[in-house]
Image (cartoon, rainbow, N blue to C red; front, side, top):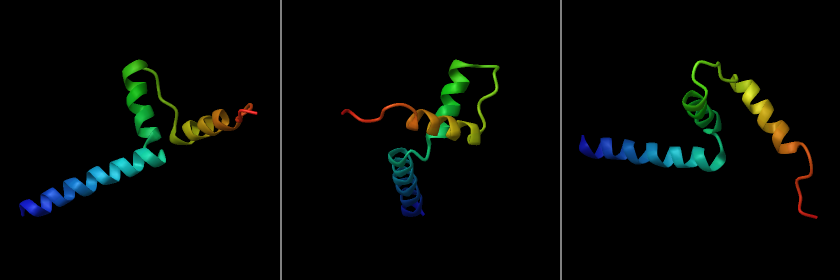
Length: 65
């Protein structure tokens, strides 16, 4: 039983690392940040968050030369 719980813990840790590297947990991190810095105001919906992220990513010059 102990090995199973250790395996689950290891898989969970690896999965969280993968989500962080790929940016899949960006909305979860945004919600944590929003809760700490803007209490009492509603956060963006997941759809609004990703739309704003894409706007920021693709607006303006994104290259060095």
